[in-house]
Length: 511
Image (cartoon, rainbow, N blue to C red):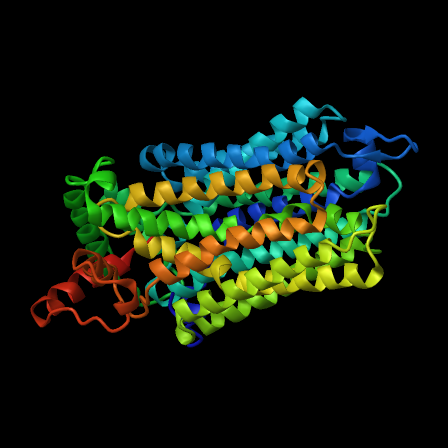
């Protein structure tokens, strides 16, 4: 990941920036949906409509409902990400944006109109997931294809930053509506979900198709028109160099595709290593249990007796925005391995500490005020370590490891692993917390799973700063151990070839 470029002529690139922002609506949808649902789970009227009546007359959400309603969206996201591939290939990126927006709008309407029906509510979550999955598989691709080289790095890195902003907005909306003494307390956040895809639908007629897709379809003139539209803010823009670079890249990828097979991911040790590293990055990003804080943060805070769980949840996303922003700015200034090893250790220690505090629960199931505060502080520490390290770096690592002839296949596998891991963590958390009666001692479980992150950081993460895709491919071909990636020198006879191929790779880099 390159460091943030601050010497950019934003004025000459304002059109391209605008189109990148349209694509970033997908990140906003993902972030908002994740967080507003975290909040409404803790609202009394939501529990009354979708929960179970307790002996004392109060209402609470059942473990099965919590687990299924929160996790089933990731099934939809997995299907949506898979479905996005043929739509991208045959109809283009704008078609995916249209399909994704419609899925979210329809899903949001169905959700609002479910009126306490669990099956209908589950259907709405799947529909929303289908849209979010399509966005996830396409938005970064589109940004990488339309952003001029001067802004491509910052545009790609700020994608997660935009996601964090929408999460903060969602947390603030929940905090603002949770005190309403009616079902509107949770329906308002639900209704607001249609705003973002609605804006996308309004912007799509004015948004150009990816010139890369046009070139894949042999539509050279349309590609040139798209490039001119994207770069209209630059008075002296000449599309000749860009169109040639795209053409070279398309031809190169078509040649590589001849040797690309699913079987080679298993039988070829080099391709298998790439697959393991790319999928591993997305696996360890979630296996540490971070979704427990994000998905169940409010109800978890309520269970340990925190006075204002919605404020606690809002603070989490303020910290996330600050941390992600710092991580983006620092870029390569901190070595990747060092970052991951130190922050992974911090995640591990904070989770074990949460588990330790969880053992102080009284026979009545309550915690002292000081214990509750301590757990919340440790949660904040966990969030900071996560977002400064694997939370920000995993997408970049997975992209960089997906080099060579099987790039698209490896990327697809990595995204599949991501959604499956998220689903697993979200689905099992309520059962461990409530049915298994672990409570905050669940920190011991996630502390244990964080050892996967530590092991991955040590054995599978190498330094790629300043390396082109072609050079990373050569590191794999030469079977260089990851601890030597930073210092390994490519044989001088290959330097010119690597530089040429690397330049072609970087022209339309897909994250």
